[in-house]
Length: 385
Image 1: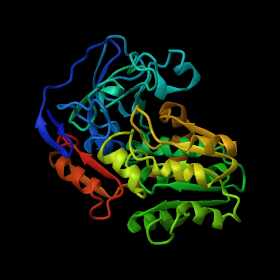
Image 2: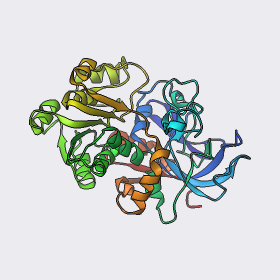
Image 3: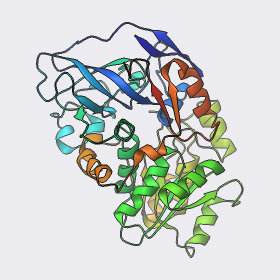
Image 4: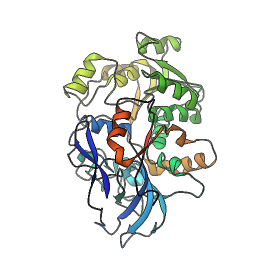
């Protein structure tokens, strides 16, 4: 089968790989119909996440058709079209029982923090992902969710990560009616987070980035205020304070993570020398610009090592900080309703549809922010067969 292959930082290609096989009675094999390149994949692509091994197939956002199931799979059947949450979750461990599906203890039992992820580094369990014609999906009795009749594949594929992550970012922000919320990062997750803030009752939503085309897109999709931290302000923290009568935002969302720009020291230590788990610039801005007693919600990806963070400011301001990988399965019932009722249209984020054969070009375009790319979707050659 054709699959994406990681050869080292900034080096990916499409190659022929062996077909996945059933390894456990609860496995399923899915023929991939749509798969995305995610901003989180760029952290791997750029070499910012430890233990990303040569030969991996990325891709934690995909939908497809089940073509084979293990002997103990009963919740889905061959022929079902399913969306596959990026979390690999058993549904029955102590963390899954709390709805913490991004922290499943069975799918990545040697880790002390995250659960297993499809198509991510070995820090997430080392499972090959869906940027391929076929993918093996563990715990098929729990994870894969049948796509409702009438839902497009493009909407469905964005329910595997982007939409639930943006929604959970807003949820973790603890938004109260009328709150001012600032979102750092106008990538797909940040844009979706800004859109979802309104669902929780926000009275004002501001998004900050440095790419004008992304800010324009965010204004149109999320109906929020959008500002460029390079051209519209000297200091994002001072700007937000001025915008909020010197009180600060009620909540801030870090939707950037390890590759944030805007601070030379953070960029050098976090992105160039890898002395910390990525550049924490957006996290600094969030902590310093939220009001006393406010909430900082983190969904941007950082590596599993130390970061230089102003913890004293967090303590002295009485800030609540929340972060986690999105528990996709927990959010799906509500988000499916929102999509089917027309409240959310995730597929509007998609700007590029790229053949899987051209995966290297897809990564280059997305990583370099070429051609006004917001969200690229890869189409395997067998998707229409």
